[in-house]
View (tube, rainbow, N blue to C red):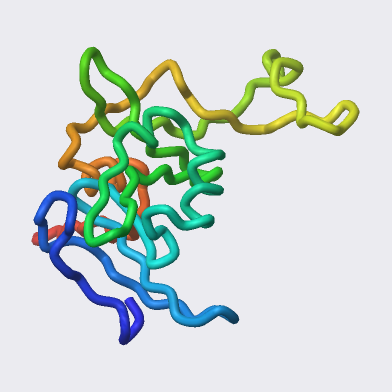
Length: 164
């Protein structure tokens, strides 16, 4: 965390694990929020009715738009995180509701490589893919657990001490 980053109460779920960050841009300062409990995110450019919000929604999946919440005139959405070397976290419909889904990155086998061509290239193939056959699901308020499963946090492994 930088000195201006802090944890605040989430406007969506009320948890005290909402990460607030400040960024300076040419247009001015932007505040962003990402709740580590519910996984919803927003920033100060996402004002209800703004052109920025309209453009963002044009490129957004229907489920994410359906889950949108408005708090203090800002649109909050469930986040989608893609870490090509590790995998993805995204909201996914499950029965009549939704959950956080984690899929991990796995190597593409030589046998399967022709199934994964890189668009716009000739004879080039992806070396990894997302393992959609083995999703790991987490409840709506378990975003931090999903992030930990993906490996977003550098948590050192405990060393064992051999006492002879």
